[in-house]
Length: 465
Ligand code: CO
Image 1 (cartoon, protein in one colour):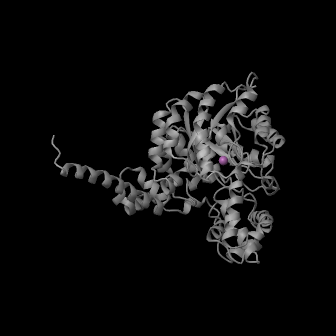
Image 2: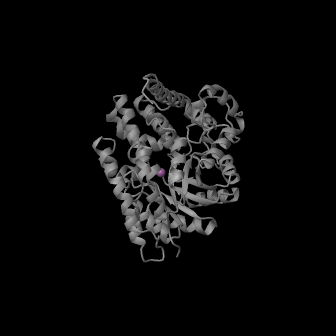
Image 3: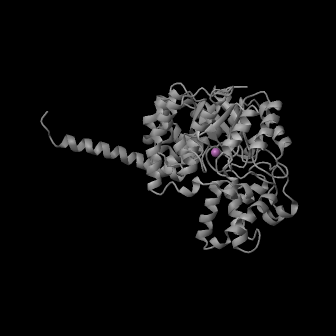
């Protein structure tokens, strides 16, 4: 029996999953030192959608947030989520951008980088993984978990072995949809622990209501670390709550050693924040319930709400059930990609097009065309010739690591944005989200100007000294 360790997700995945990533740095700052006292394995604080949300919705510099968290969290490891060669964006970037991004993430305070690829094509993890290790970080590779005729235990064992051979420091089973059920988790963790020597972590969501049971069985099978969220920001589409798991394991050989009293201080901080988002309508009580569709269709929670809004825009909400049934068919056609960003959005959009237009693949988004050409990597199953033909006609497909075909981008990106440059990190913000970053840079300049002009006003008033 091993003591179980906990990664706390409240500053990243929990609010990404419940309130569209809108938590502000000022809502985090007062509790950082307490969080540091809890004794977590790590705090997940950065990456995923937080970067985009900071710039786009909060007028915050994500790098500044990271530095501020690092300043207050002196002992606990800080963790982030990175989409391999996609970084925090939605397309593949050149190796020089990926390398620079990882370097700067670690230089600004990140200890552990969880790196995943939507297709589990490990070639897309190479650059981020190698740079993380070179910069002294902990490179955790994540297996995107899904269910399909080919995604069985043997498949996961093969991927995990590849990751260990590449030099991963630990492996995470990333169940973004909350579809890993307790006994399947027991079998999967048991087999993976027999296969790899590096630590194993489990990440899931409460969407379908099984997550705490899944953790308990995974713990019995020997999983080393699990991802939880402090109770006010847990459950529903977020992670299992931290406190009940800590209480469950207390006094057993799995005891986490965390103190419920300290956890309660953390919970007390987030309770009013949660209430505020509930009152504003940002936290929809609907996402806190059990979603059985997640178990039936293996569709992640966020994707379901996206489908609803896409259908509303087309005045086609009555076709929701049809779209739900079309999603698995599109997945099958495309070689069973796991439904995680960016594939979840792509498959969902294609399913909506197929149903609303009344003809399958009559219209195909350019991202799906690129995917079929091989520009996202290799799916678990080869796409059939007939589907390929339907989507890209006679166009050629690629078989190498997609980033091998991308020229270095860093210098040209720097040139494009240099008038706004205040710190080297700005180049990366711009590389990932050009339009959004420019808006933010302008806002930042305006803020400065405001302060300067106030100061000037003050000087002009000839106050006695
Ligand atoms: Co997640």
